[in-house]
Length: 486
Ligand code: UD1
Ligand code: CA
Image (cartoon, rainbow, N blue to C red; front, side):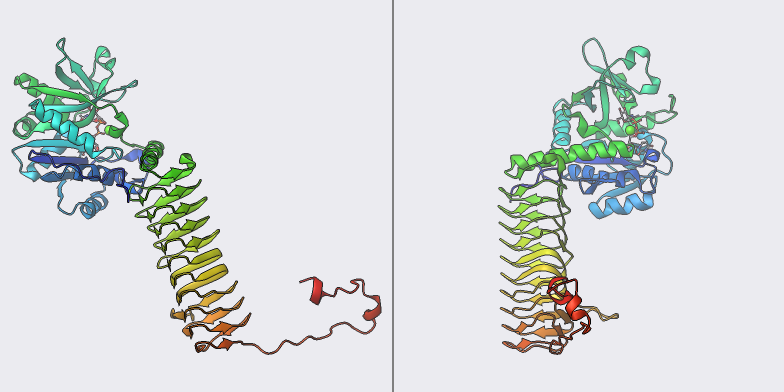
């Protein structure tokens, strides 16, 4: 398998003692959602989940997450992704400086480097955080900001430099002069600190500004006043620092994240016929020479083996698809498809489906908790629930595995090399032996011994329904309804 792209790669660990603070206490009212902003998902992960994956790649000594709004949702979610995280509660949001003060108190850290990031920047990569922290440390700065140069700086903190080009201050939109507002170098909100400087600076922050908040960015001015070095290191790929505040921005970032993931897989040897209609979530893993046809969605922890062809019009969540398998126009969840197996068109693989190598789940077939052996086939119009089908067996068209008696679910076993007729019903629990056969239309209520043929229902009767006077004057000629019209 090629290495999975996207957040989650591990990097060489940082040499330094590193603490990362993730700010996730804000409200996110513009989402207009009962779900906390940072829990909204793109690429199969919450926004904060992407940030935590980037942070995890640095293998920091400590991670502190500041939670506030909707913390009953946000806290457990973060803990589930990062069990050793320190959660710090900010009761009311008095600004980023206030949030970091609470985080530092919770971490109890006074040495090394402290990195501060927001919880709503899902495109952020571990490499970018690491490079920034290393630049900050190499330049021996008291504080550094990850900056960017953008066309429209509105709303961001502006990086104010002096004539020598040294950073003097970060000025927030509402506090900036007209001159300062024309500056296009802005703060991403991601900052790095020398831990000792940060600990001393935080209590000195005030909220004497347009928003009445404690601004973390004011630490820059404090460092300058103390004659310390301040760094601003621009990131070229600005989108990595962008947050989503509403669902329009969420969709835009989701599309961009997908574009990046799809592009990375193409560089790793996957053929994608139509990147615009192919969606691959961050947790998916693909082998080289996989072919993805239009309108394919690979979700969750789906894994696809070499030379498999998926699509068109297929969605697979948490599925494992073997090498050389073919899945066309299908939906699958928690299903396993063996090497060289065939699925679809129009198949629904529900959880617990396991199709062995060379097997087939064909057209208009639904399967659930079904083990279908090597080379076995369920080609047409069938429901297979709670069943084992032995290798090489063929299930006739239109077969229903009747697993539910109205109260309980029951199991059906079909042996190896069996051939069952069309339009059968297998009333579970029932066993059909190796090499057995069933006639068309059979309702199998009792076990069929190996090598036996089961038939049910009485012999066919043909009743002549033509009245004597119609026999000469029928307008249907020779073809009565029994022969031509069904
Ligand atoms: C902040 C920066 C600004 C930067 C911009 C980048 C400050 C003062 N300003 O502005 O320089 O250009 O980010 O997007 O830092 N948060 C808390 N608790 C609080 C306040 C905020 O946890 O009390 C969290 C928010 O949930 C958010 C992050 O901190 O994730 C940034 O806060 P926000 O209010 O969005 O800051 P901006 O005004 O965007
Ligand atoms: Ca913001």
